[in-house]
Image 1 (cartoon, rainbow, N blue to C red):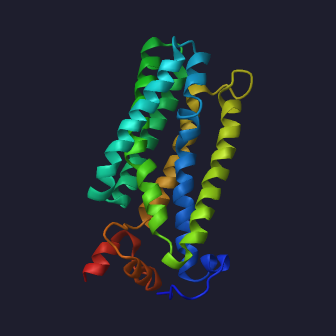
Image 2 (cartoon, helix red, strand yellow):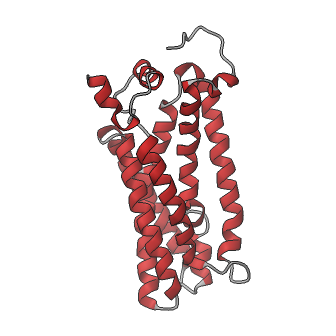
Image 3 (spheres, rainbow, N blue to C red):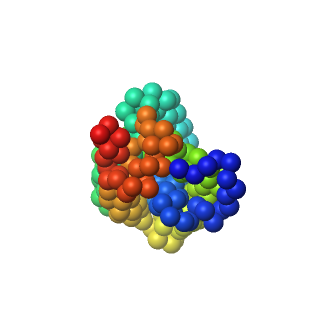
Length: 235
């Protein structure tokens, strides 16, 4: 475990076991962007107006209200359930919903399919804020070495913002009728990224709930199985 009085630099974030911890911080935060937040929270109202939904502003408000409710619930679930279960199971549910949304996007002109897409978008927003939206933030703030926290937190913020900017920039082109013309079918693309993210977090994202910073450092330094961090400490 690093002595907190020891002088550190940003280069230390990329050396030894800190390298994998920095990657976890960056990738877990970036997962919030590649799973479709730019579309659902950024352009849901625009998409609704493109396909002729009446009162698209109400759709946007509904998504954010459900997100607020889910985020409020997360104050309890993050500490009660833990970070890893929320992230892993939340991602699983979200990429399934995204594939359903994308598949139904081929029948956007059908009123029933359109209603189902809208309902799935609402459910997705609630699940996101209850699971990944809150769990990834808590996880990213805990996983780095305590002495490097001042460096890793800006890194994850920059990474999250950078990936968010990329998807926020290309999303209108993907859904615009005169460009990609994907509409809700963009859910297939985000669902694919969701699967990749889910595979990564399932195998590499550990649980940090109830673990001290000293224990986390020992677990990483001794290369314990990340899916079984709490069990390794219990032994």
